[in-house]
Amino acid sequence: MGLGFATPYLAPFIGQAERVIGLMPARQGVMQWPAEGKCLTGLVDELELPLGDESMDRVLVVHGLEASESMRGILRQIWRVLAPGGRVLIVVPNRRGLWARREATPFGHGQPFSRSQLTQLLRESMFSPSGWEVALFAPPFDWRPLLRSASAWERAGHMLWPRFSGVIMVEATKQIYAATPLPTTLKSRVRAVAPVSAPLPARRVSSFDEG
Image: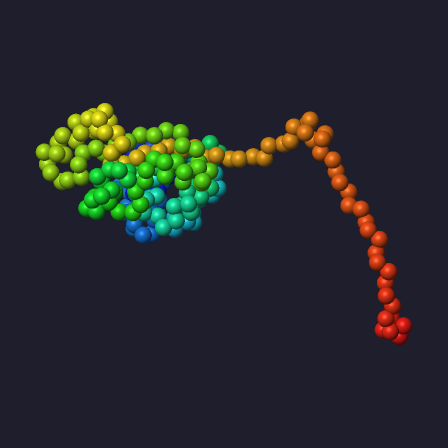
C-alpha cells in the first residue's frame, strides 16, 4: 500500500505483489493510476483507512506524514492495517536540509523531522525503526546544469554532509507487545489476602420501626 503521493514508486511491485493500491488523503486529492488499465488509487480519510486489520505486508508513505494533521492518528491506522511483523517505509523532509526551507519544493510544506523526533514518534506508535537512509543532496533550485549533476551531488552528499540531506527515509517494523507471565518462583511467594468481615454495629430502633 502506498499512502500520500507514493504511486510513482509502486509500479515495480505490480505483478509481483498479491495486491498493490495507492491511497491519497482527501486534502491532497486523487489521481488516476496507473494511466492504463484498472485504477488502483482511492481518495480516503487518513484516519479511517478503508482496509481490514492486518491486511497489508508493506506500506510506503511519501508526502503523507509531514502534511498530516494527526501524525499519531495516521500511524495508528498504518499499525492497524499492517500484518504482524509488517514493515512501513516513511520518507519525510529533513529539518536540517535545504529542501524543508524552500516552499517552492514538495518538501517545503508541513512538518520536517530530525532523526530523533522521528524515532520517538515511531516508538510511541508501536513501531521499531530498523533501517535508515538519506537522500536528495542537490540544492533545491530548478537550474538545468544543476539537475544534470544531481548524481554527483548525491555521491558527495553521502560522503561529506549526510546530516544535511533533503529527506530522511526510515523503515520500521510493527511491534506487538504481549503480557509476560510471572515466574513460578515469584508466584509461590505471592500470598492471597482474604478480607475479614467486621461485626456490624448495633442497630438503633426508631419510632418508624416500632410502627
